[in-house]
Length: 391
View: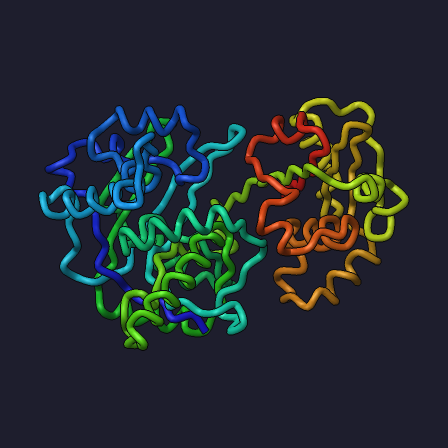
């Protein structure tokens, strides 16, 4: 099963950068161009310069966003802006945030995890990836040879062993970001605790919740280095990736939807988005009084209390789908894991995108017909948009 090891993290030195809130950003893939400019101006040591650098008009193969990120990383380490911890350890990382008036605390364990091919079924995916996004991250990987952000993975802990251990620590570092969310970090360096953590994960599979592109990029980078060196020591750092490991039952594990927007569909595919065709796998209801994302979310939440619920919007109609027995039977025969078969995103991909619309995995990874957005209203307003919500 999963090989989860401690690491010597490279961290900001507060005495050199001051307020840590001024040097952090959200994940790179949710930062708008306006946000990127704001983070650049906020602090000369903001991590935006590593994760999402600015493109320049005169960029070349020798001077571009990736080479500048590598040069900046090297400079910051040389000047003591960033410093590597001397003692290997795991890192407790907690985030306290509010969503729709409700308070959440999400607890994760930062660690380096041995990379495994999908076929080993040690680390399991739930979605396809886009070639363009992987190319961007691979170029950054090549330039910096560093994990700049963790992959979010879930694990099962039905007895709550890890949850109890992690909740026993008082965080060493506390940061409040620009939207008022609180971030807590604490290194775990006790040898006995480290041994218990390694033993715990040696019996478990991991499920990627966010970071499929980063994981596949890590696999690709490892393969490149293997071919260059014609061999790798098992303990070589390139065999591992930085991950944030979260208990699937963690009370703060709130997963918000990523909506699918379809475009350039053939007429036959558009015609397949009908109650008659979708009725093979879903109970279908036409919604005529839903015009906002909040209204649609309310209907999805109500339907989701009875089972998996999805919504589809085209120019002509809005449909509410609830998985039926035929749909559940089809997912059982999907050739994926049982855990994958019950995910809303997996049901949307298999039954709607693949079986109903006839899209191939390579169509989705190439971005030929599919884009993504976290903005529910943007997805609702888009023509020929397919929206999948977690309900």
